[in-house]
Amino acid sequence: MNESEMKMARLRAEEIIYRYLPEEKGYPATIVSAINYSVKAGGKRLRPIFMYETYKMFGGEGEVIEPFMAAIEMIHNYSLVHDDLEAMDNDEFRRGRKTTHVIYGEGMAVLAGDGLLNLAFETALKAFDVKEADTGRTIRALRVLADKSGLHGMLGGQACDVDADQKKKKLDLDELMYIHENKTGALIQASMEIGALLAGAPMKEVDIISQVALLVGTAFQIEDDILDVEGDEKLIGKRVGSDEKNNKTTYVTLKGLEESKKDAKEMSEKATELFDSIGRSNEFLRGLILSMIGRTS
Image (cartoon, rainbow, N blue to C red):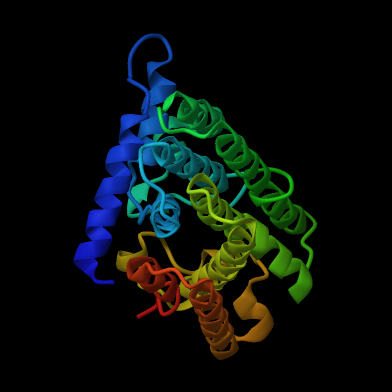
């Protein structure tokens, strides 16, 4: 995978995502503006790219994947809008721009996050309008989207993280892994599972790709912990050291910097082993999985 391929994949994903964003008109124009500001703040669009490439790998064709690509990015961005709030991480910058609550105020940012979550499911439901949509597959994909973004997925992981912060609780490794696997890993799992399900992959292969995604998501979050210690602010688009400032328990605080790098690398290598065991080819997707390590360089 090279930079040109990644740029093309990101632009393709963004074209699809933007197509589903609401128009900034009428009485709710301000909240729509806040929603669109949040989504258009940039980013690598990893989740919709993972979804699309997994869909292709399992032989998926057609447009049924597109509403789900937009939906997963909306859910991801709603979580970021809320994560940046003063009541949570209190971050002023994300991806090199001022965060939504700084521009629109905290109340409107809360509503923008709520709006994005609701819009995500409005958008995903549009998959039923696509000609080639298989009703059974689409329903299963919706269940994954709801499950992995809710109490048994991203929201559950986020809630445990906030609970620990409020109680000033020092997490052990098992608790931290639960947070990483759900707060970050669950949406990457959802992306790849949905791609496989909508393409009609056998459930055995859906299960394997789900394991791959969980490893990738967890390694990605460990890398994020590492970047907060030694990342380049110009490259990552936010200030480093916010975890230390907020006295957060991270993978690095529990295991140290070098061990964290080693574990992230091992998880990614295990992910590629499982990926290769499926026996289907998508070199771009394989390269994307490998790129989840070494983000500090």
